[in-house]
Amino acid sequence: MQKRIKNFTMYYEDTGGDGIPILFIHGYPLSSRLWGPQIEALAGAARVIAPDLRGHGRSEPVAGPYWMDLLAEDCAELLDAIGVDEPVVLCGLSMGGYVSFAFYRQYGVRVRGLVLAATRAGEDSEAGKQARDQAAQKAREQGVAKVVEDMLPKMMAPSTYEERPELVEQVRRIMLETSVAGATGDLQGMKARIDSTNTLRQIDLPTLILHGEDDQLIPASEAQAMAAAINENSAENAILELIPKAGHLLNLEQPERFNEAVLRYLKRIS
Ligand code: MLT
Image (cartoon, rainbow, N blue to C red; front, side, top):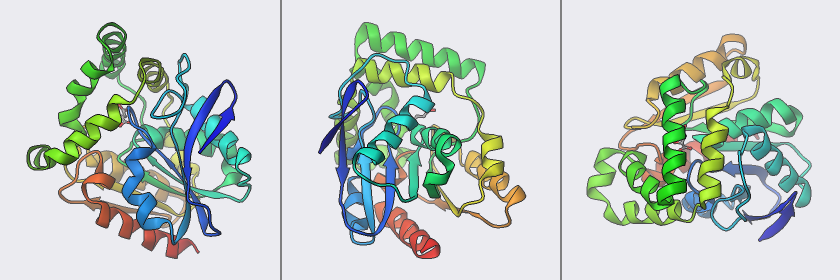
């Protein structure tokens, strides 16, 4: 399915139905295809909506930078375009988590709860910012495929990467669908993102934090820090689950564990 959002055509999946709407926001450099196992398993329990962010997957590439606020605005406009005006659960993975924080800041009343997967609250370090610039330059000069090959071994747990070549190939295909504009737009936007720790301190919504124990890109200590920040002022709103034998793409690596946790969370909030 697709809708015109601002200056581009946005592709999205929408299972429909009258369950709680969950907006799944993918990470960098991925697409809604990341959420295949969730779309299938959760469709009976929720209305699953999963866009391809601008420049990713089947959505049109447009020039960046893709500020996290802009990506959040695209998501809100998609909800408007498909007539979802009740509050939604946001489920963001990695960069999708950064977009979820921006969405919460801009449209807090539209958020019913949060599922934060493989993400972190802090901004980039100076070294991290430099690495963004280098990756963007590589994408422009040598193409997205080069950036994908650099990142691929770190996208999953070492055991997944070694033992599950078909999953590695699936992830490679998803990543390769990202346009140069999409990859560089994300990198510029992530580099400029603000620290969201104070945002977390203000969250008083039921929040599920899911993290792979073997995440090579964002250590599990970041998930613990997010849970502590949310729970500082709001009793026990945040629940943290660490998933064994899973890395950065925990929802693909351990889909049953991920889906069970989300289903339990949906029961908790309904
Ligand atoms: C992602 O998976 O979205 C990225 O790895 C996040 C990041 O680079 O900070």
